[in-house]
Length: 116
Image (cartoon, rainbow, N blue to C red; front, side, top):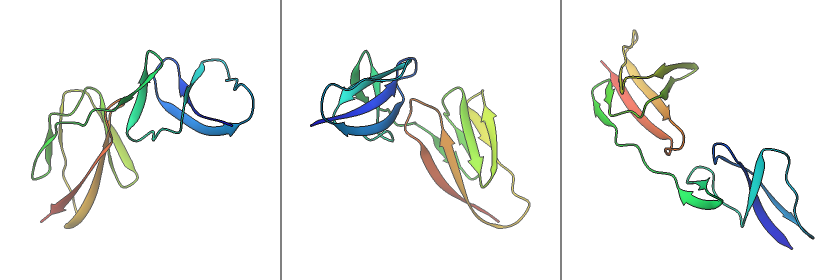
């Protein structure tokens, strides 16, 4: 039995995991690596799984700096692209908000911000 994980050849982003007998085949634009790999923690460079780096983000209140370029910042259903490394958030209603930041190949990051 062969266990493997598909990945996008251009980006290295991991896709579906599989188990099968015989030699695996993959769709155009995809490769595969042996074993089951966690896409939240790994991606592929030159056919080898590599740990995704963490983001070195600094948070000061509702200001996020040190974001990779570009990064996507999501608060609830609203998302926006940051291309200068800094996101300054403003909330109209007091409360706690979850802020998710993605910038592949970096590991996704999640924060909680409290708006006064």
